Amino acid sequence: MKILFIGPTRIGDTILSTSIINFYLHRYDDCNFSVITSPFAKDIYVNMPRLSKILVVNKKRYGLHWLDIIRFSFFKRWDLVIDLRSSITSYFLNSRTRKIFRGNNNFHKIVQFKKFLNADEELVPKVWYDAEVSSKSLVKISNSERLIAVAPYSNWSKKDWSIKKYKSLLENEFFESYTIILTGISNDIRNKKEFDDFLSSPKLKIINLFDRGNLRHMVPIFEKCDFFIGSDSGLMHLSASAGCKTFALFGPTNDLVYGPWGNHTVIKSNNDMLDHGLKNLSVEKVLNSIKENIS
Image 1 (cartoon, rainbow, N blue to C red):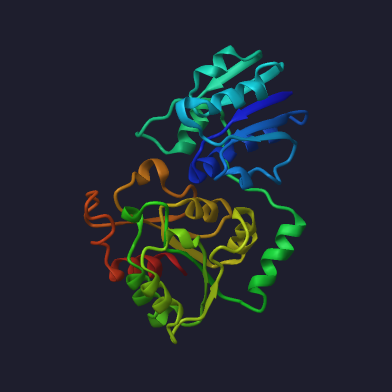
Image 2 (cartoon, helix red, strand yellow; image 1 turned 120 degrees about the vertical axis):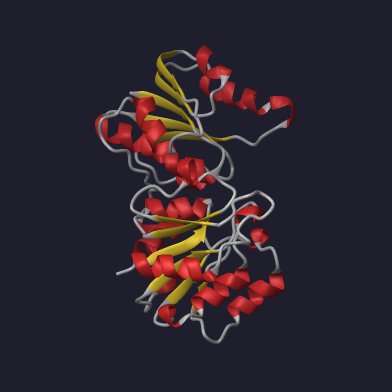
């Protein structure tokens, strides 16, 4: 079965959509995928099973990037086209069956995907990695036993908690036996001085993995962590997909749709108005929630 998978652009959506790919991988032994994705999300697919081809599409002015998609997909015969971008192009492809997703803001994405596929079984997001990725990743945390993953930044400042509050939280004696795995990309750091103050805290044991490796490299690390703390971001979804207990800090974004999937905890700001972001989320509320949910 030849499947064309036109994936989302954003990292978080892409991680959640791997649940659709996993559904087909488990149901059909003979299926293989050609994937269309963005430069931001491409690393998620590199080690996926039964990957035939991958097209990385850079967005162009006037929608000209769709010409690349047409050249990649138009002159082929597909058994199934799965389009998560709701594009008109999918209707014109030579395919026996096509599924074109249209989302809503009323249900979690995974619930929407389950209905989209008319699936009885539970859908599970999963990001794949190989032995080489695992060995390169785990050497970074060798000799570390109790670990907390912390991803303080997202691609939008309104979704982020103050790095000063992270520092105040993690300096609490509750966390003194843990080593902090700090992850993210430097381009998202809002205040370099405050970030450096966090790194230099004498009370914290930190392994700084900012800008180290790609998304796949974080999966085996998350699998070793006791839990994760971070804002609504691709790394939050990656942590949840790795089975790491995830504490997700939410302000202006919709946790009903984009909360971490699985047995995880959303901690919401007392005021989720856009202008406030996570400013009103107290250290005490986050600390108490973590204590209540960590045995």
